[in-house]
Image (cartoon, rainbow, N blue to C red; front, side, top):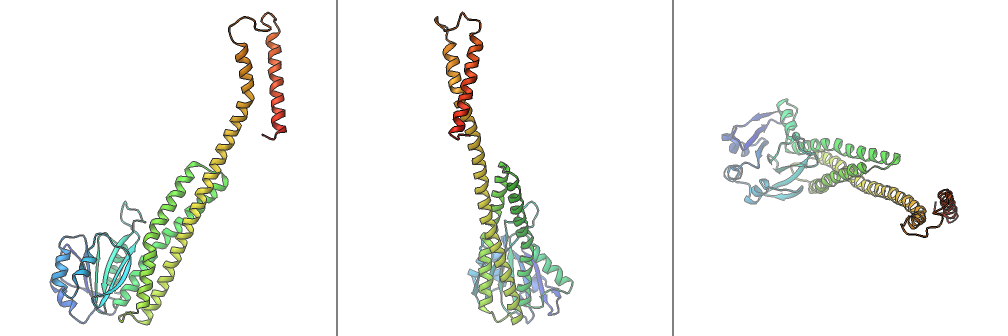
Length: 323
Protein backbone atom coordinates (compact mmCIF):
# COMPACT_ATOMS: atom_id res chain seq x y z
CA UNK A 1 0.00 0.00 0.00
CA UNK A 2 1.36 3.44 -0.96
CA UNK A 3 2.12 5.91 1.81
CA UNK A 4 -0.68 8.27 0.80
CA UNK A 5 -3.22 5.41 0.51
CA UNK A 6 -4.03 4.34 4.06
CA UNK A 7 -6.80 1.86 3.27
CA UNK A 8 -8.61 0.54 0.22
CA UNK A 9 -11.43 -1.99 0.55
CA UNK A 10 -14.10 -3.50 -1.62
CA UNK A 11 -17.14 -4.19 0.57
CA UNK A 12 -18.72 -7.62 0.10
CA UNK A 13 -22.21 -6.55 1.19
CA UNK A 14 -22.15 -8.97 4.14
CA UNK A 15 -20.16 -6.93 6.64
CA UNK A 16 -16.75 -7.93 5.38
CA UNK A 17 -14.33 -6.46 2.87
CA UNK A 18 -11.49 -7.39 0.57
CA UNK A 19 -8.34 -5.29 0.44
CA UNK A 20 -7.64 -3.64 -2.89
CA UNK A 21 -4.11 -3.08 -4.18
CA UNK A 22 -3.20 0.49 -5.25
CA UNK A 23 -3.00 -0.62 -8.86
CA UNK A 24 -6.54 -2.00 -8.73
CA UNK A 25 -8.27 0.94 -7.04
CA UNK A 26 -9.33 2.65 -10.24
CA UNK A 27 -10.91 -0.53 -11.62
CA UNK A 28 -12.61 -1.20 -8.28
CA UNK A 29 -14.10 2.32 -8.22
CA UNK A 30 -15.57 1.66 -11.67
CA UNK A 31 -17.02 -1.67 -10.55
CA UNK A 32 -20.40 -2.59 -9.09
CA UNK A 33 -19.38 -3.26 -5.48
CA UNK A 34 -19.05 -0.51 -2.84
CA UNK A 35 -15.46 0.67 -2.45
CA UNK A 36 -13.85 2.61 0.37
CA UNK A 37 -10.58 4.43 -0.23
CA UNK A 38 -9.01 6.19 2.75
CA UNK A 39 -6.20 8.66 2.04
CA UNK A 40 -3.67 10.78 3.91
CA UNK A 41 -4.68 14.36 3.13
CA UNK A 42 -1.35 15.68 4.38
CA UNK A 43 0.78 13.62 2.00
CA UNK A 44 2.20 15.64 -0.93
CA UNK A 45 1.25 12.95 -3.48
CA UNK A 46 -2.40 12.62 -2.47
CA UNK A 47 -3.86 15.44 -4.54
CA UNK A 48 -2.04 14.46 -7.73
CA UNK A 49 -2.99 10.81 -7.25
CA UNK A 50 -6.67 11.69 -6.82
CA UNK A 51 -6.68 13.90 -9.92
CA UNK A 52 -5.05 11.10 -11.89
CA UNK A 53 -6.76 7.96 -10.54
CA UNK A 54 -10.19 9.33 -9.60
CA UNK A 55 -11.07 11.43 -12.67
CA UNK A 56 -14.78 11.55 -11.87
CA UNK A 57 -14.03 13.87 -8.94
CA UNK A 58 -14.03 17.57 -9.73
CA UNK A 59 -10.68 19.30 -8.94
CA UNK A 60 -12.53 21.58 -6.51
CA UNK A 61 -13.75 18.51 -4.60
CA UNK A 62 -10.21 17.10 -4.53
CA UNK A 63 -8.88 20.42 -3.25
CA UNK A 64 -11.53 20.45 -0.53
CA UNK A 65 -10.63 16.91 0.55
CA UNK A 66 -6.95 17.80 1.05
CA UNK A 67 -7.42 21.34 2.42
CA UNK A 68 -5.33 22.36 5.42
CA UNK A 69 -8.29 23.51 7.50
CA UNK A 70 -11.89 22.38 7.32
CA UNK A 71 -15.12 23.04 9.13
CA UNK A 72 -17.94 20.49 9.50
CA UNK A 73 -20.31 20.92 6.58
CA UNK A 74 -22.31 19.04 3.97
CA UNK A 75 -22.79 19.79 0.29
CA UNK A 76 -24.00 17.95 -2.77
CA UNK A 77 -21.20 17.92 -5.32
CA UNK A 78 -20.09 15.87 -8.31
CA UNK A 79 -23.11 13.58 -8.24
CA UNK A 80 -22.41 12.63 -4.64
CA UNK A 81 -22.25 14.13 -1.17
CA UNK A 82 -19.30 16.05 0.25
CA UNK A 83 -19.28 15.63 4.02
CA UNK A 84 -16.79 17.04 6.51
CA UNK A 85 -16.96 15.80 10.10
CA UNK A 86 -14.92 16.10 13.28
CA UNK A 87 -14.05 13.58 16.00
CA UNK A 88 -12.51 13.79 19.46
CA UNK A 89 -8.71 13.90 19.32
CA UNK A 90 -7.55 10.76 21.16
CA UNK A 91 -4.01 10.87 19.83
CA UNK A 92 -1.14 10.79 22.30
CA UNK A 93 -0.30 14.11 24.01
CA UNK A 94 -3.26 15.82 22.31
CA UNK A 95 -6.16 17.80 23.71
CA UNK A 96 -9.53 16.07 23.14
CA UNK A 97 -11.19 19.37 22.25
CA UNK A 98 -8.69 19.81 19.37
CA UNK A 99 -11.01 17.75 17.21
CA UNK A 100 -9.73 15.73 14.26
CA UNK A 101 -11.21 16.31 10.82
CA UNK A 102 -12.31 13.60 8.37
CA UNK A 103 -13.37 14.60 4.86
CA UNK A 104 -15.60 12.35 2.73
CA UNK A 105 -17.08 12.23 -0.71
CA UNK A 106 -19.79 9.57 -0.98
CA UNK A 107 -22.18 8.28 -3.58
CA UNK A 108 -24.07 5.02 -3.96
CA UNK A 109 -20.99 2.87 -4.59
CA UNK A 110 -17.92 4.87 -3.65
CA UNK A 111 -16.50 6.33 -0.45
CA UNK A 112 -13.45 8.59 -0.74
CA UNK A 113 -12.21 9.73 2.67
CA UNK A 114 -9.16 11.67 3.77
CA UNK A 115 -7.64 12.71 7.08
CA UNK A 116 -4.55 14.52 8.36
CA UNK A 117 -4.45 12.96 11.83
CA UNK A 118 -5.43 9.55 13.12
CA UNK A 119 -9.07 9.04 14.01
CA UNK A 120 -10.17 6.16 16.25
CA UNK A 121 -13.58 5.87 14.58
CA UNK A 122 -11.93 5.01 11.27
CA UNK A 123 -9.80 2.36 12.97
CA UNK A 124 -12.95 0.88 14.51
CA UNK A 125 -14.61 0.56 11.11
CA UNK A 126 -11.45 -1.00 9.70
CA UNK A 127 -11.42 -3.59 12.49
CA UNK A 128 -15.13 -4.34 12.10
CA UNK A 129 -14.67 -4.96 8.36
CA UNK A 130 -11.82 -7.34 9.07
CA UNK A 131 -14.05 -9.16 11.57
CA UNK A 132 -16.89 -9.42 9.04
CA UNK A 133 -19.16 -7.15 11.11
CA UNK A 134 -18.66 -3.87 9.32
CA UNK A 135 -20.85 -1.71 7.08
CA UNK A 136 -22.48 -3.44 4.12
CA UNK A 137 -22.91 -0.37 1.91
CA UNK A 138 -22.16 3.34 1.76
CA UNK A 139 -25.23 4.25 3.82
CA UNK A 140 -24.18 1.86 6.58
CA UNK A 141 -20.65 3.28 6.43
CA UNK A 142 -21.73 6.90 6.97
CA UNK A 143 -24.20 6.02 9.73
CA UNK A 144 -21.60 3.83 11.46
CA UNK A 145 -18.92 6.51 11.20
CA UNK A 146 -21.18 9.23 12.60
CA UNK A 147 -22.30 6.97 15.43
CA UNK A 148 -18.72 6.13 16.40
CA UNK A 149 -17.68 9.78 16.28
CA UNK A 150 -20.47 10.79 18.65
CA UNK A 151 -19.98 7.76 20.86
CA UNK A 152 -16.54 9.06 21.81
CA UNK A 153 -17.77 12.60 22.37
CA UNK A 154 -20.21 11.73 25.15
CA UNK A 155 -17.60 10.85 27.84
CA UNK A 156 -15.83 14.17 27.36
CA UNK A 157 -19.06 16.19 27.53
CA UNK A 158 -20.01 14.25 30.68
CA UNK A 159 -16.54 14.89 32.11
CA UNK A 160 -16.90 18.64 31.54
CA UNK A 161 -20.28 18.57 33.27
CA UNK A 162 -18.79 16.67 36.23
CA UNK A 163 -15.89 19.14 36.49
CA UNK A 164 -18.39 22.01 36.53
CA UNK A 165 -20.35 20.30 39.32
CA UNK A 166 -17.13 19.72 41.27
CA UNK A 167 -16.08 23.38 41.06
CA UNK A 168 -19.58 24.49 42.01
CA UNK A 169 -19.56 22.17 45.02
CA UNK A 170 -16.18 23.48 46.15
CA UNK A 171 -17.47 27.03 45.74
CA UNK A 172 -20.21 26.32 48.25
CA UNK A 173 -17.54 25.25 50.75
CA UNK A 174 -15.57 28.42 50.16
CA UNK A 175 -14.10 30.28 47.20
CA UNK A 176 -10.48 29.76 46.35
CA UNK A 177 -8.39 31.53 43.68
CA UNK A 178 -7.51 28.12 42.17
CA UNK A 179 -11.20 27.55 41.38
CA UNK A 180 -11.13 30.45 38.95
CA UNK A 181 -8.43 28.78 36.87
CA UNK A 182 -10.31 25.45 36.97
CA UNK A 183 -13.63 26.91 35.80
CA UNK A 184 -11.94 29.01 33.10
CA UNK A 185 -10.33 25.82 31.76
CA UNK A 186 -13.72 24.05 31.72
CA UNK A 187 -15.34 26.94 29.88
CA UNK A 188 -12.51 27.10 27.34
CA UNK A 189 -12.85 23.37 26.57
CA UNK A 190 -16.65 23.72 26.21
CA UNK A 191 -16.19 26.60 23.76
CA UNK A 192 -13.69 24.61 21.68
CA UNK A 193 -15.94 21.55 21.55
CA UNK A 194 -18.96 23.61 20.58
CA UNK A 195 -17.05 25.41 17.82
CA UNK A 196 -17.03 22.17 15.81
CA UNK A 197 -20.06 20.34 17.18
CA UNK A 198 -22.59 23.05 16.34
CA UNK A 199 -21.77 23.09 12.60
CA UNK A 200 -21.51 19.29 12.71
CA UNK A 201 -25.08 19.18 13.97
CA UNK A 202 -26.13 21.37 11.05
CA UNK A 203 -24.22 19.20 8.56
CA UNK A 204 -25.94 16.02 9.75
CA UNK A 205 -29.29 17.78 9.71
CA UNK A 206 -28.70 18.84 6.10
CA UNK A 207 -27.64 15.31 5.14
CA UNK A 208 -30.78 13.89 6.71
CA UNK A 209 -33.03 16.43 5.00
CA UNK A 210 -31.38 15.97 1.58
CA UNK A 211 -32.34 12.25 1.61
CA UNK A 212 -29.62 11.06 -0.81
CA UNK A 213 -30.61 8.17 -3.03
CA UNK A 214 -27.96 5.85 -1.55
CA UNK A 215 -29.59 6.07 1.89
CA UNK A 216 -32.56 3.94 2.91
CA UNK A 217 -35.29 4.79 5.40
CA UNK A 218 -33.30 2.89 8.02
CA UNK A 219 -30.25 5.04 7.40
CA UNK A 220 -32.32 8.21 7.71
CA UNK A 221 -33.68 7.02 11.06
CA UNK A 222 -30.10 6.45 12.26
CA UNK A 223 -29.18 9.95 11.12
CA UNK A 224 -32.17 11.34 13.02
CA UNK A 225 -30.94 9.66 16.20
CA UNK A 226 -27.40 10.92 15.63
CA UNK A 227 -28.74 14.42 15.00
CA UNK A 228 -30.68 14.26 18.28
CA UNK A 229 -27.56 13.13 20.13
CA UNK A 230 -25.33 15.89 18.78
CA UNK A 231 -28.08 18.43 19.44
CA UNK A 232 -28.16 17.31 23.06
CA UNK A 233 -24.36 17.57 23.26
CA UNK A 234 -24.47 21.12 21.91
CA UNK A 235 -27.19 22.03 24.41
CA UNK A 236 -25.14 20.48 27.21
CA UNK A 237 -22.08 22.46 26.12
CA UNK A 238 -24.15 25.66 26.06
CA UNK A 239 -25.37 24.90 29.58
CA UNK A 240 -21.82 24.15 30.76
CA UNK A 241 -20.56 27.37 29.23
CA UNK A 242 -23.30 29.43 30.88
CA UNK A 243 -22.89 27.68 34.24
CA UNK A 244 -19.13 28.12 34.16
CA UNK A 245 -19.55 31.85 33.49
CA UNK A 246 -21.99 32.15 36.40
CA UNK A 247 -19.62 30.21 38.66
CA UNK A 248 -16.69 32.37 37.54
CA UNK A 249 -18.66 35.52 38.35
CA UNK A 250 -19.66 34.07 41.72
CA UNK A 251 -16.03 33.22 42.51
CA UNK A 252 -15.02 36.76 41.59
CA UNK A 253 -17.81 38.17 43.79
CA UNK A 254 -16.86 36.00 46.77
CA UNK A 255 -13.19 36.90 46.45
CA UNK A 256 -14.08 40.58 46.04
CA UNK A 257 -16.32 40.43 49.13
CA UNK A 258 -13.53 38.76 51.07
CA UNK A 259 -11.08 41.45 49.95
CA UNK A 260 -13.54 44.23 50.80
CA UNK A 261 -14.11 42.71 54.23
CA UNK A 262 -10.37 42.55 54.88
CA UNK A 263 -9.94 46.12 53.67
CA UNK A 264 -12.82 47.21 55.90
CA UNK A 265 -11.22 45.58 58.94
CA UNK A 266 -7.92 47.25 58.14
CA UNK A 267 -9.68 50.60 57.69
CA UNK A 268 -11.39 50.28 61.09
CA UNK A 269 -8.08 49.39 62.74
CA UNK A 270 -6.40 52.31 61.01
CA UNK A 271 -9.23 54.63 62.16
CA UNK A 272 -8.76 53.45 65.74
CA UNK A 273 -4.99 53.89 65.76
CA UNK A 274 -4.95 57.16 63.82
CA UNK A 275 -5.66 59.42 66.85
CA UNK A 276 -3.43 57.23 69.03
CA UNK A 277 -0.57 57.67 66.60
CA UNK A 278 -1.21 61.40 66.45
CA UNK A 279 -1.08 61.76 70.24
CA UNK A 280 2.02 59.58 70.71
CA UNK A 281 3.76 61.38 67.87
CA UNK A 282 2.85 64.79 69.30
CA UNK A 283 4.21 63.94 72.74
CA UNK A 284 7.30 62.28 71.30
CA UNK A 285 8.83 65.41 69.80
CA UNK A 286 12.16 66.46 71.33
CA UNK A 287 11.30 70.00 72.39
CA UNK A 288 10.76 71.56 75.78
CA UNK A 289 7.40 72.10 77.44
CA UNK A 290 6.05 68.54 77.10
CA UNK A 291 3.33 68.30 79.82
CA UNK A 292 4.01 65.75 82.55
CA UNK A 293 7.69 65.40 81.72
CA UNK A 294 8.59 65.77 85.42
CA UNK A 295 5.72 63.61 86.75
CA UNK A 296 6.57 59.91 87.30
CA UNK A 297 2.93 58.86 86.77
CA UNK A 298 2.52 60.73 83.45
CA UNK A 299 3.20 57.62 81.34
CA UNK A 300 0.50 55.58 83.08
CA UNK A 301 -1.94 58.46 82.99
CA UNK A 302 -1.30 58.85 79.25
CA UNK A 303 -1.80 55.08 78.69
CA UNK A 304 -5.12 55.29 80.58
CA UNK A 305 -6.19 58.19 78.37
CA UNK A 306 -5.32 56.18 75.24
CA UNK A 307 -7.29 53.17 76.48
CA UNK A 308 -10.26 55.39 77.26
CA UNK A 309 -9.99 56.92 73.80
CA UNK A 310 -9.99 53.45 72.20
CA UNK A 311 -13.05 52.51 74.22
CA UNK A 312 -14.81 55.70 73.14
CA UNK A 313 -13.98 54.97 69.47
CA UNK A 314 -15.26 51.39 69.69
CA UNK A 315 -18.50 52.62 71.27
CA UNK A 316 -18.89 55.29 68.61
CA UNK A 317 -18.19 52.84 65.72
CA UNK A 318 -20.72 50.42 67.09
CA UNK A 319 -23.29 53.16 67.45
CA UNK A 320 -22.68 54.14 63.84
CA UNK A 321 -22.89 50.40 62.90
CA UNK A 322 -19.48 50.43 61.29
CA UNK A 323 -18.93 46.93 62.67
